[in-house]
Amino acid sequence: QVRMVESGGGSVQAGGSLRLSCEASDRHFLSGKSVGWFRQGPVNQRELVARISGTLNIFIPDSVKGRFAISRDNSKNIVYLQMNNLEPEDTAVYYCNTVNLPQPWGRGTQVTVSS
Image (cartoon, rainbow, N blue to C red; front, side, top):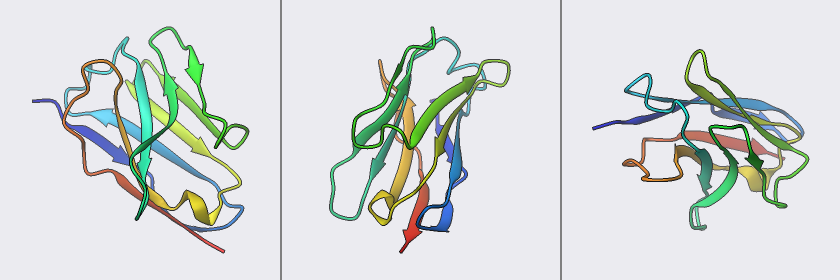
């Protein structure tokens, strides 16, 4: 079974930046697939924060538009989430998954933003 592997989280002060990486245990699994980044805060449901298709169509919800960007390196089969101007409200565990036929959720990567 394919596992999603997220990395790059950490603790930053408000206004800081982080870049998260998403890979799959099967190195080629993400190839051509739509991949989303999601987050789940302490009291919130899991929400989508960015999505990129295999043809590089991108969706960023208004809640993070202008601060978050998603990209992918097809040569490495990695999907990135660049987060700038982070706010304390962005504190959450961040997950990635394929949008169609999602796999079991990975462990995620913790992002903590202090004021």
